[in-house]
Length: 348
Image 1 (cartoon, rainbow, N blue to C red):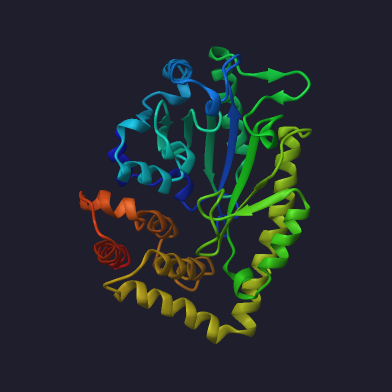
Image 2: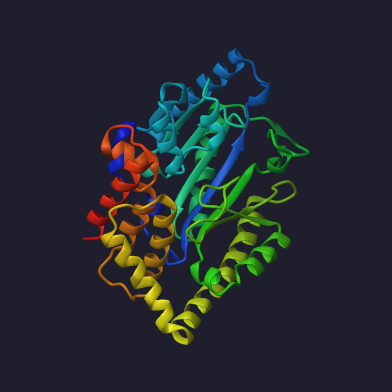
């Protein structure tokens, strides 16, 4: 596959299937790894960074899980392609900010992606649709073991895997779950929920992870530290908390659809009407309206729209995706027009 082929592909995490998929969009496990006896990325020379890049690529080339993968050098990509990968959750802002000696390997259906020379030498990511942390862990654990046979990872018997940021030292694992929580937002319970999870060693971020604010009622919940915890401990803790959040969201949806039924359903159908008829629409407005329509689909109020199609619209209406679809650079005004066109065609 080539990078351009991804525009016509639905990512695994957007399929809208898996446990609790009406609320849990996706489950992700990320591992931070570094090569032994080489400086962390921020302190490495250009020669050392190139050495990391070659070592990791050589290991990926002989890995069965990554056969036929897309391997993209960041310094060979234009600005739209970089943003395109970011919008698909395949790279981080840090990876594309300074592109020298950096790359990403993308596996089949975008389940696996491996960033090279980000904050750590390797950032290995596995994403699954729905509430599927354990399946994601099984995949990434196997991949990590295979890569570890070819690469000598930096490891301490006292501290575990050594990472550039101390909060990742230990397992080097960050487990996260993307949640759609419109009812908790609408009933003004979300702040209390977020305050509670922070006391439990978890953190909440926006749709694009660290450094982003929540939009479209999406929240990414993940562990804050790894040192002193096993992988199983981390997953158990997140699963326990996520199950509670899912229950609260379900209860809030029931309350809205019974005690405030007319106003609640009006908001959902009004959102669908705007999306179907608008000729100009911004990215922020699109995200908010799609959130309401997805809620209507999940609750069985809207029956003729497939959830996977809605999930895809959250991504395909982003700026870089619109420009990839059009095949040229677009101004902000042109993107707003193209976005409305894409939505109308999808919701016919």
